[in-house]
Length: 105
Image (cartoon, rainbow, N blue to C red; front, side):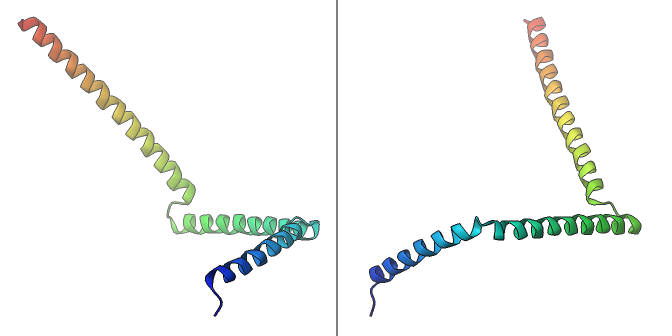
């Protein structure tokens, strides 16, 4: 029975040889050109599908992804303003308490 160390050494030799071969192959223009073309085609089809889905959602009367993102952005802005107002109110209340304490003393 082959021990773990022997198997591991054999695997490491195979992995190093395979990695060198695949690195050279993946840098080849024969692979990069068609790979880039396939990626471009995939991104164009994704864009077309996203546009079709947005049109379908709009036709059904539901908000599209862009509509949802716009709403979430507005909600985030309102939440930030509310937090700022709460902080300002807390500061004003603290100042008011200090003034009341100063007038009583």
